[in-house]
Image (cartoon, rainbow, N blue to C red; front, side, top):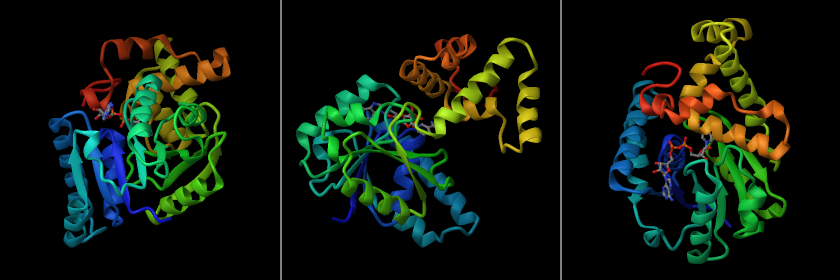
Length: 282
Ligand code: NAI
């Protein structure tokens, strides 16, 4: 089987990037989101990012045009293409919301369609067990998707070798580097990254240093391209909190407790770039 028709569910920070890379590499892509305005925003972001690639001479104007012509937007799941071979979910990091969506898709889509989740930390095994275990897999892209090479490919307990091989090849066809990971909370990327970000937030909360100083230490001292607080704003503080909660719940180890300041900022809807303010203002 070859994948050529892809449906992406959720066109936010990650979804629009996933649509971008698939469409740029010749796949027919449908993007489903909750309303027209969100879809329009996603298309505007994709167009802006393609314009930047043209300006930097990474792609030609023709590639930009063909990429956009490969994308179709929709608000109703019943309009998903009958030829769809792969569904990639990139909705909010909320297990119940993801389960509800996948159960609905499982009832309406043919059994051979592969389901993938871009979840940062939620169990692929659990999402798979509720739907089609052998055809369910984690496809964890990094932000910003068009720029970042890595894709963690997460094998759930029952993911078949056939599904894994096909998704690995598909990731490679996008110019990405897939890495095989087994299904434990946070996988690899967030199990290592998120406790570091959470610790930076604790350092701020305890008054150890200013937010600027904390970011400068990690940038100049560890050669990180971006400080942890800037990175948290970039990822979205709601996403960071959701990942810490999955780690705490999954390992039952207090070292993963989310910092009270992170919880307070999410409660105040200061989610980072996407709301215009997090640790920094945008
Ligand atoms: P986001 O909040 O920017 O976008 C989520 C989108 O999903 C929104 O446009 C929303 O309208 C849509 N949506 C929600 N429920 C829906 C439904 N039932 N049907 C259709 N559309 C629906 O979220 P973001 O940051 O793009 O995250 C998406 C997923 O990717 C999450 O699971 C997150 O953990 C994961 N992720 C996020 C990264 C990041 O840096 N933000 C990095 C890697 C993974």
